[in-house]
Amino acid sequence: MSDVLDQARETPAAPQRAAGTQSAARPLPLAGVRVLDVSQVMAGPYSCMLLGDLGADVIKIEPPGTGDQTRGAMGFKMKGPDSMGFLNMNRNKRSVAINLKSEAGRELFYELVKTADILVENYRPGVMKKLKCDYETVAKYNPRLVYASISGFGQTGPWAGRPGFDLMAQAMSGVMSVTGHPGGPPVKAGVPVADIGCGLFATYAVLGAYIGAKNTGEGQYIDASLFEAALAFSVWDISEYWGRGTQPIPLGTANRMTAPYQAVKSQDGYFVMGATSQKLWLQLCETLERPDLAADPRFTAIPDRLDHREELIAELEKTFVTRTSDEWVETLLAVGIPAGTMYTYPQAFESEHGRHRQMRMEIDHPHEGKVSNIGFAVKLTGTPQQVTRHPPLLGQHNDEVLKEIGLDAAAVESLTARGAFAS
Image (cartoon, rainbow, N blue to C red; front, side):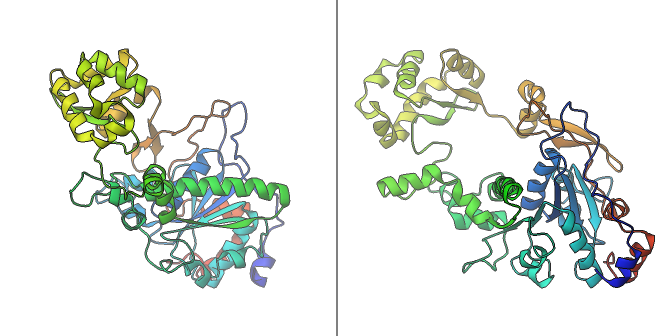
């Protein structure tokens, strides 16, 4: 840090780590853990939000003026400047706007690094090194830091320098080669599996590395990519290729390991069902009053049913079209055969079960009033997750955080004059 800042700095107190008042009997699992979220858009912010939901003090480091690109994205206007996408990936965080391109901004960033346990960034490979904020640089200030880089294709390899987006990762990982219907045009998964998957894998890695650092005092560098996250989901598909030498192809809603297990046509639309074992298959034939199917050599065992999938579904639908989807779902569930209604997102979130599991919650926001957020995807019973902070306004916590790391008014004035907070 510069001499001016050193002289202006107050006598430092122990870093203040609490992210908010906890009402649970026990503190959340990551209470006292500080995370620097130097990421934008989806994978990185999602990962850091999960850490914040578990009690970590997540400080979102954003470029002054514009902030996280997602604040202004999503194509529709909210009451305030932030998009609904941003609001759904950035709760339980504080925002500090710092210009990392300025020397003063980097000096301040290094001071924050000294107080942190975890850092997550998702700039294109090479950018953080150019900013002098890469792992090799910041680890000198904090050897126990766990530093995760999220990118499209990883930090090394022939594709490392390419822009990393979910669509490209789905295409180049093979995910799109098995999505859609046979013979149809390319189709991506309807949800951003590479982005969200990478955020989940990064969270798993940083928590494991953090536990290791607690034991050894040494942090480490984590290299996570959307490409590898998408590849990691290919368990069934690549198993078919490695096991049988058959290149996986799109199957619509069907499953390549068993049949019947897919969406089927009913009197009023479609529903999903699965008879994934021999016992369930025979139960299905009995329930449908179709002993001919049980006796048909084309459908005797799972390999036979896979080889004759189209004929199998055509035969089943001759019966399924005689009743409505809801009637069939109720009938099949009653005899232990998995089945389900095909819901839209609004129907799923507002369903009796979705409401019971609290998968939609309302957060108070200074611009939006009550704003909807996706509920916690897993539930901790001993230390239930909480929303202690609404998604932050850009730079909302600059003064608060700078005071926590021991900077007085003179130090902040010096930083300001030297462009630490300028866009």
